[in-house]
Image (cartoon, rainbow, N blue to C red; front, side, top):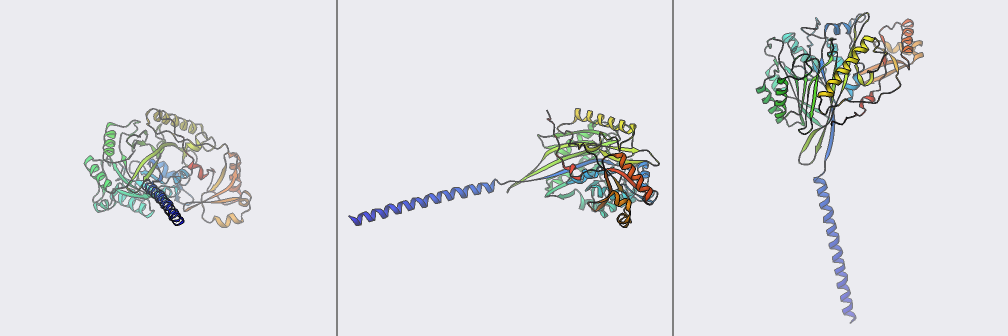
Length: 479
């Protein structure tokens, strides 16, 4: 009897042990299945911010304003002083270079050639890519086309739209841009070249539907995350897109483009974000910088587009996550010689210190009203980017000419009294003297420094925190 009980006990123990093992195996299987499902469903999301601006031009008045009679050089730093923090804050900034870099003699309308200093300042201010196919591409014929390409290459600014020859176009078009884990195909075309025949063997991309369809097929074969088409099109000074613009835009979207950005009218035209089809058209961004002063032409819009890419083991999907704009206005200040400054509304819409004259304040107000009236009525899902404004304004004196300043700033008592700050921005060093909470005090300090040192190339500037450019936007209800 005892032996039988021992055997039964052993059997019961083995059954219990077996059941425990089975439970462990079942739990392990469930865990492995869940782990596998988690791996399969794992998604990696990355984001990138794109910033597009309109026409970059140089009329005679712009070129004259940039010339420094003391150094005999061209200096554009004051022109882009206040938009540069915004341009730099985007992951990728793209604009339309509507001029040539053909060398001297420098000239504005009707056949543009701007100083190389402009391109250098565009690079320093934050531009990553420039498109070059427009109606002024051939203003200086072959030399203008090829030298513009060479200057941009030397500055490592990516570009597309014009090419030295067919081999250059085959190898470089569509332009493939890689940034922050994203790959973009960029295409650029113009309606014409002001009647100037294309200089052989150069190529300027013209708007031709057969060519565009073939190029977009090539772009799709690049398997980039998004295709962007930058068009130079439309009717000058018209605030609504033409029928031809709408037809060409629709073609681009059908053939795979996600973004279609427009230039040439020199005034703002509407922006349309089709959220259902996940594509966006901005028909015209107006003038980013120019010498044009008539109503509607003295400013432009900067278009922000945020893209997100969701990637798993099998595929990735790139979509538009947000789109908004902000306005910028170009002041032409009167004085001994004209001075152009681009003022972003984010900081300067209500500024009466640097935008001093009543005429300038009135012109800015009219541009603001006109632009918002147009966009509020015709934009689709693209609101204005709004950032909180600080109640505290701080001004400093910027030393424009940095050459030979190091020893002076260390030893000169007046500079030491106000204090100097070196701000490293990209490859540039900004030298700021003093911090003043009233514009009038900064002006007094400026006169003090000018009378007690040999420094003459100084100006009062408003201090802008570079991090302010990254403040989130406020997207209004599209309904």
